[in-house]
Amino acid sequence: MSGSNNLPPVQQYMGYHGNQDPQLVEPAQLPQTTTTSINSQQNLAQHQHQLLQAFWGSQLSEVENGQFDFRVHQLPLARIKKVMKTDEDVKMISAEAPIIFAKSCEIMILELTLRAWIHAEENKRRTLQRSDIAAAISKTDMFDFLIDIVPREDSSRNTTSAIKAEKVGENANPSV
Image (cartoon, rainbow, N blue to C red; front, side, top):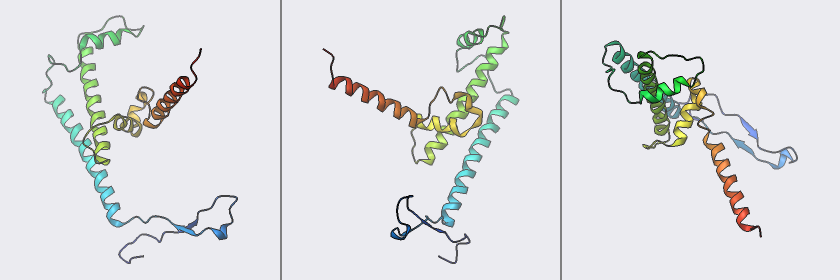
């Protein structure tokens, strides 16, 4: 152990399973966390926090300063009205409501994209993948309502492999 590391020494543990003789198994050494890796993890977390703070600061200033153009929309207002009317309790919709919903949805999509981008950067990639979106959803409580819509990557892989296995089985035993 080096003297420059202020971390406590790593404990040894026996790596055996119930029915094995513990004397026959050599002790394994847990991986050591270096000060450099701790600093880089802290820097990464701080960078992510700064990105989110900058995002929300820009969104807030845009809305407060009136920089939002109510005539230009990224999402179709007719579709938003249609979704709003699916609720049985909604009788009439004011003209402002779909505009506010459109801006709210736009901000939510932007934040979700930013969080997915952070996940892609953690994995040293510059292309967003479905797994980045799924990770962003699972790491943020605010997006819990999307968990059923965007399943975790590991469960979708299992489903895909099960479907492929069924198709292979059907091809191997064709019905006559």
